[in-house]
Image (tube, rainbow, N blue to C red; front, top):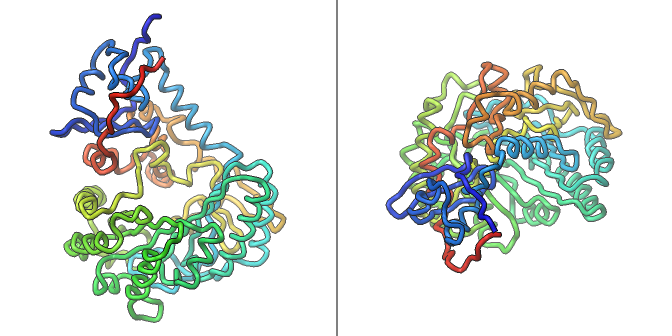
Length: 441
């Protein structure tokens, strides 16, 4: 039998190190720290197909058949994901009020909790779609979503019941300040299917309480920390991203705080770390914020992640995996529903008319303005020529930030693209023993 002629995948990224080479394929999402000779096999016109390392490189997608049209594969991957009708992603504003007044917040707090007719609309929308769904993904947002935890509980109960009845997978996430995630409420939420949380701590108590104060004044750290310690001590099934927003005002204290996070939550796979530079996101205090230049800010995140790894904390956001850097607003099956029933694509540009793409009616009908929807979902790698030759195309598919494309007219690239070589060692583990693998036919 003639051996298949192989070539290196155009979607394989590499970062050399003294102990080997990190390889990660953005199309398959597979990668590891491989022996240094893996690079020699990738360079050869025909690597030995019986070599166990060649077998592994093929399995992980770093070596592909010579006649493989990877452009076409990436395009099909994008089309099958962005517009599939058996997946529905809803970002739900349970309330647009918040019990915090964070210094960098961009929200206006003009609306209360989700109206009864909107809650009925959400229930009816999901009920109508349920028979054809394979996945329902719900992201709770606000304001502070748990400020209206009754709404969250009411709708979550409906979603879990429909999931059991129709057999689709149900996943739920909440971007929450953690203040209400108490020992009383947290088990109820988790039991109702809400098992993924992002909670922000901006540093130790004296630092955090300067930027994330309660609405009426006073600190919030002590309560959040107690709630997190309860979760840590419990046997509950959940995942929690600990987010740190850093700026020139708190960066110096951040490594020491990460050490504390590691001592408290490290080596518990339920907890991961995400860091993000503070930006001027459109809030009333933007002019007073001390922020890093965007590029500098994301570069400064790397040593924080390197330190976190030594403390037993992993990164949550694997942005180099397939679709890892795609903005939810670019997907044709993702909609954010505000408390009034207004449908938007982006949770940042809430007051931007371009973002107001429709309305949800009480009977579950989504009335969508296709002209306003189109710029969010179509100007991406399917139309942009510069994306075609990019090695991380399967990660972002030219859709890292549709809003930036609309504002500035150029295709935005995810921040991880510029320094992916530094991120690979933070994402990947050494390759396990592969000598026993059989040759692929």
